Image 1 (tube, rainbow, N blue to C red):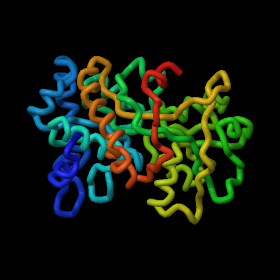
Image 2 (spheres, one colour):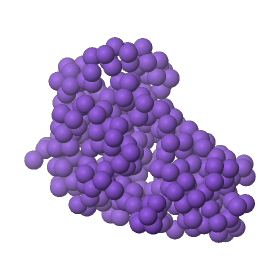
Image 3 (cartoon, rainbow, N blue to C red):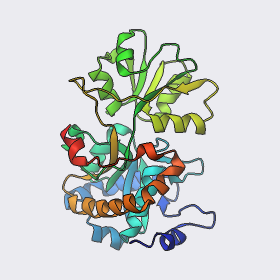
Image 4 (cartoon, rainbow, N blue to C red):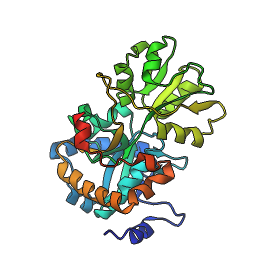
Length: 308
């Protein structure tokens, strides 16, 4: 059994926040520059081993600045369910610090494959297509899809199919996201979708009346609705499960991604995650970000998700 209480005591600063999540001395831009300079060398050497991470004292991670999964707060601190969970797991494995950078969604997997960072900590959905490119850990959450829409949902958008049926409706999705794929599978034309690099950009389109809805997970949209004080003008639709090309329900669930040839490190982190699921540390870590019991992945496995 891990000694979680002693670890948490050491990991928190005077203000109660964990202090091992870093974006660099002058913010995320500094980390982007620093990691890009070493990316080529790292790619030539192969992904970092756990021993190398322990020796250097940190693991590098990519987020997408999407609350509540992983984002940079107003004070410039990296936080969110994924980086906080990564920090807790890394600490159990003797890695003292998480160094994170925020990148556009469609740059996460290419950056991981090029050696720009060690892990994607962005709440990435586990899909068969992505399984061909990266080595996913076991899922640490499951969700439903939803839309953020103007109050009253004037276009009556309740699923991707409802968007496809309404030729006047437009939605914002992250480029290369599962939402984009779900919409395409449901028959939403390209002209009815606005693709963006991050959640903040998508919500800005909605606020400026350039789209009728933003498509993301229920947890992401509900968290941002509350944290950004958007409830007076907007609402989040009831969650729904998307359909695949055969009309069967998919399983929106996700977790951390490592490079395809870095399964040894992936497996080490999986061991810690398994223990966190058993002793309640997983739930305790993600609950402050709005993840309740409905986010429990249960017995769902990466093998199942990769085979869907």
